[in-house]
Length: 453
Image (cartoon, rainbow, N blue to C red; front, top):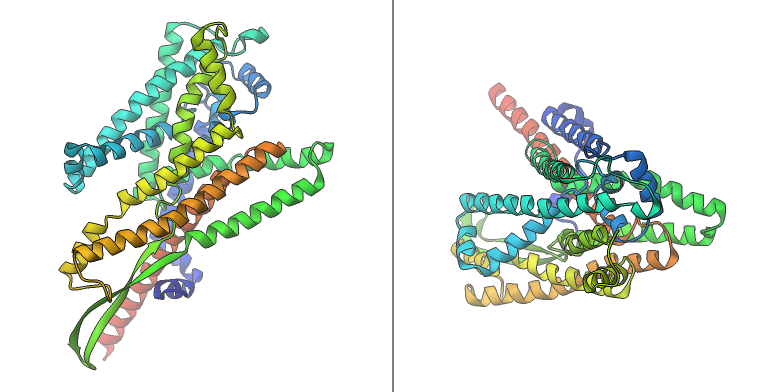
């Protein structure tokens, strides 16, 4: 059943789009920022030979770095200034949010409102710089030995200066992406960081389509497999769109009050999304798995396999590769954990119950206060179980099928989930701007008619 907002949004006339000047400016700003992001993905690190690096990337294709490369829009294989993408920021966000839930001082800071959130965001940025420095050093170290066994050198002049320059460049690239994402969020349309991740995924689509149909032409991928894969993608998009709009609506009733039609009771609904956490759980789980694996895979380019540390790196790269059972198990556990964790972060039953009690609202049959809090927690836990199962199926099952069939890793469940979610969210924001513009026109017309009377 469609809500009043959905029904009103469906009646919005996009013919008024040209009149919404502010919305057009926001969209053009977003497009321009994403173009800047794509240009930066082709700017290589200083001291790196892009031609040699491209040849080495073709030789080592496949594995966990391909997944990281997908999130960065191909920046990793080109080793550009933004090769690390926004994943260090996401990992730092996980750590800060976990700490704010467990540490009393940070938990108190979180309740201070805007000032507290700004302080936590500052801690997140510090953590991002720290993670970028660690990952950047191992990336620079791995680049110096990258391709040594093949007799080629990806770095023109290896040494301390190259490592320092690479680390500084990678930190600057990631922090610039964060600034760009903040500008998109405040001056553009949609969530900036999510749009940057989505743009990186969508940018890989032409290469994916070319590889898929080239495999069909050469016979390495059967026509039936291609058709089945495309059908699976369509079904997944429809299923994700349906589940992302699914809600559990709780009836909220307010005391009767006198109106022109007599005593009437106000009623409304408290919508609880089946997937309250949106795309956060798979992104968080991916980033946690990619952080150690990026370091071990780059460090594993030139290791002594007879030593304990060398054997450990080789074992990690072997058993935690994309499509391996241990990787799939850890990925599913991470998604389920972050579903419950992030839902608890964004929705507080105690605070919601207190707000309802303060405003005189109540759920029919449930006493206000503690009983309402327990009921909200009960309902939220049940629907979060469904949301966690849905996310696990969408993200893990297609990845497993792709790994077993050998189809290129682009349209997996995680990437589809991110693209569909960000697209739906961006379209909803566009509809909200159009709706506000339509209301503004109605108010202006009403004022003009009032003056003529």
